[in-house]
Length: 178
Ligand code: RB5
Image 1 (cartoon, rainbow, N blue to C red):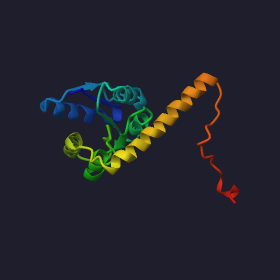
Image 2: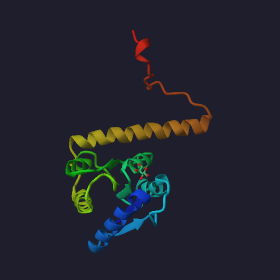
Image 3: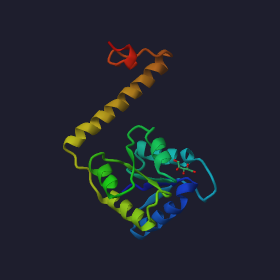
Image 4: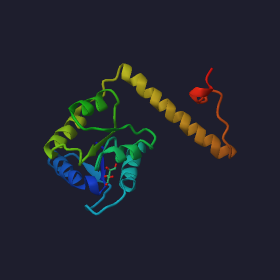
């Protein structure tokens, strides 16, 4: 089993260390991408390498921590193939796996959730499987959006200019709509 990628900023550092101890006790391997203390830092510096590990297949899953969980989720979702979800209770945790096949869990240490409850959510997230079925089709639509993004970038690189493909629906401000 590939190691779970783990990362935090200062706002999620304590919870990262607590979750690491739990993973060690459960014999679950992980790779810690930092940070290493509660000294103030910027969450993208640590969230990005951990999310990239998932995007590039070095890890199947990652657990990211910051004050709210939101910054880490935003950073992680910039990477192709990443589905990062902010999990804050049993329902959001379950749905992130069952319906969205989330491969990154983002946790907010300052979100008024007790550490023991966060540990429960992490365990729940790790053991919950994707439901598949109709959700597979929906996930494949997300993958298709990523494919379009990748081909747009490639086109830009090749031609040094951006010509939208015919399939692009142009945004029209509502005042201009007939
Ligand atoms: C740090 O103060 C805080 O902004 C950060 O941990 C996180 O909550 C950002 O989304």
